Every structure is written in structure tokens, then in C-alpha cells.
Amino acid sequence: MNAAEFFDEASKLNIRLDIPAELSVSAHSLSNEALFQLPLLAMTILAITKGTAKPLLSEIGQLVGECLERTVPGFKGSSQDIHWSGNLRIRTIKALTFLEATGQIAVEEHTRRVSTTELGKKVYQSAIANETPLAMSMKIIELSYQYIRDEARVRGEVN
Image (tube, rainbow, N blue to C red; front, side, top):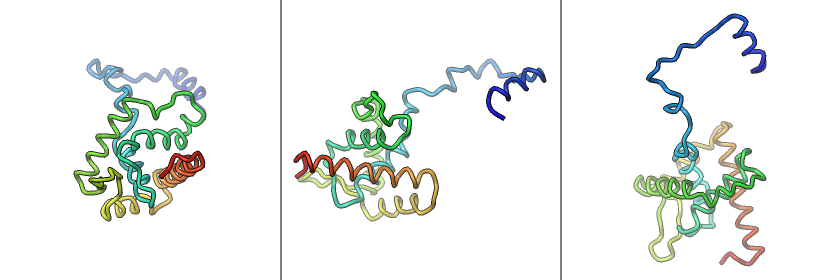
């Protein structure tokens, strides 16, 4: 049964859903805050920083956005350029702060490169151990990051 058939059937049967007045639509609609969830951003940061190519702290927001643009079907080929989103960058900083406070990432003091700690690697490995949608997305994000690094290397932008 598709959505149109469902609503036709509900109309025929006169099915109504009574919603209490205190539960307004605006209270349950997605806001910009819900656009980028911190756990997803944290997992994306772990995926980016776990390899041998350690990104600079100042690059993380841009890289997270680019990886999500390449991975999330709704953003593929989109003109939205989420890697420039201020909201994404603020939420990425919150995710970075959480990961650093919990000892899952470390920022090298002199080079400002971000790397995943052993604890972060264990958390990440447990998340991708099964064939879940999260695991598959993280593997695609890893590939996206590798492609971004390869493209930058070809352009001569990577040290």
C-alpha cells in the first residue's frame, strides 16, 4: 500500500487522529538544529581523523561538510554547499569538543592536526563492525575523505 492508498482508505473509514492542543505542529517539526545531529558529526570526525592523513583543526568543518555532501543522497549534486553552512560548523565544533573531552580525539599542540585516540578508534570500530546503515555510511564517508585528499593532492594543495 502506498501513501495515496493509505490516505484514501483512512478517509473512507473516517479515521481521525485527535492531537492534544498542547502538542502543536511547530513543537514537533524539524528545526535547523536537527539538521546535523551531533552523534553523526562525531562519527564523521572519527572517520576523517582515524587514518594516516591527519587533517588540520581549521579544516574539519569544511571536510565534514564535503564528506556529507558526497555521502548523503539528498546533498549529492546539490547546489546547497553545506560545507559552507555556519550551523554545520558550529555543530561540528560542539562534536569536536565532545570528542576531545571524552578522550576520543587529540589535537596536536604544535601542528594543530586532529587524530583519533585508541579509545576513539575502538568506538569507531564498534560502530562499523556490523552491516548497519550507520556502518555503511561511515565507510562511504571514509572513501569520500580519501577522494577529497586525493583530489587536493592532484591540485598540489596537500603537504
